[in-house]
Image 1: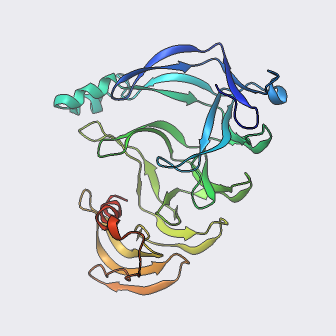
Image 2: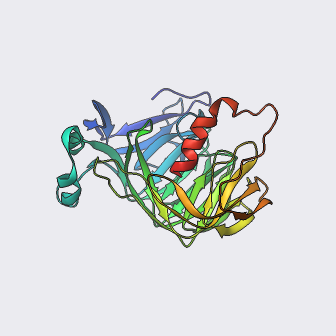
Length: 308
């Protein structure tokens, strides 16, 4: 790999070029061991990793921070999206062109623990987590005990490798754990993080071969950028925030694909304060904000609100 501005580069020893397929075939280096070297070609910290990835600040549309995400004890493999032995029922349900999903295979790191190394080679976060998510609002979700698998959503999201199950917590931009792994699910809702207690995360396949992470049940609340609960988990639903406000529901249920229904609706702000109590049968309108940065995104936000 190329050297970064601090004179650090990723190297691989013992890996081989193998084909992966997530819509189209491509060759990637898989396996072996990874290290970080300086411009004198010296191995930093005298450590070899199971995987080293460049860290991104946001999930899909963000930018590289220059830091490195590292795995100790794991191994890179090429994994089938649909395994013929464990996903027989899912494969039988596929119809038409969706049967091409059988060909999908992707790079996955099996086992080990993840941490983060600063771009200058110093440790930012020790490798103690099953998964480290992407930083948003100054914090990133971390997981203990979860499962890693391929996720595929054909409506604009494409293929990704993600984590589900286990317990979730958060680290800050300095790698410090600001919230221990105690939540059953977490979601970023455009402006802040939502946390869930009592829910069950899973990643089922549908009849089209698509797979998404779902959280069934439990109660939702929100935390701030310091990892502190500013709204305890008490709602059955929290929608996407827009200009500091979001819909909440108590007593309703998620009826896919039509979204959350029933119960009583209210509104909270991004500080966790209840602006409108949950007494409305119909969804109330979010407050209008002058010069809203979402003015041109209203339709997209409503779609996201239905999906979550």
